[in-house]
Image (cartoon, rainbow, N blue to C red; front, top):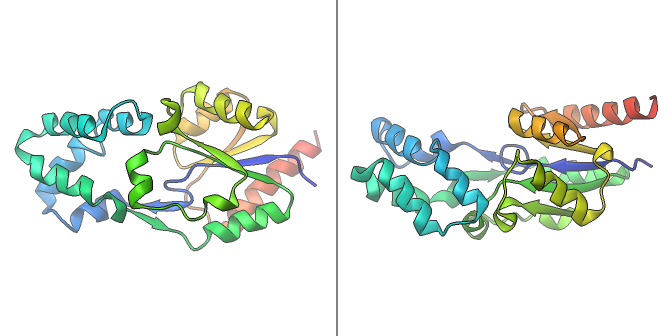
Length: 204
């Protein structure tokens, strides 16, 4: 049985997260672009994920970037639970990996408010995991990868990390993990990539 641990990002890997389509439901294109730049594409978004500021404090940072759009920014924030979408493949993927003997973990830049408005019903299928908002550090900072490994007794060289962000994948590789940059592969394709890494390790 493999001893490799599989570590998943959540948004964009285990759930769909289409910000542009979400915002387009509520705002005209010009306003959507302004609000998106003030929120999702604002470097201050990371403060949500760090959990080091209150929601209101971060919202004020966003509003300061587009003060004439406070009402629209607050509207979009209030509707954030509609942005993520469950993937039908998530639970079968985890179940299949567990049946192969893998331990399954998550490591996600995620903020607490989103957990309340979009419950992650697949979490009970994991062996454990780390949310950035409770650790006050985000990927790709090496510390968050180390926190996960220390908490669950994982050897970095025996971990395969999967994320849709190239910089987060490089962060995992920098601490000694194997990693897959997820580009929307199907469940079968992802299983093949994981198994190929396992085979290569055994042949070394």
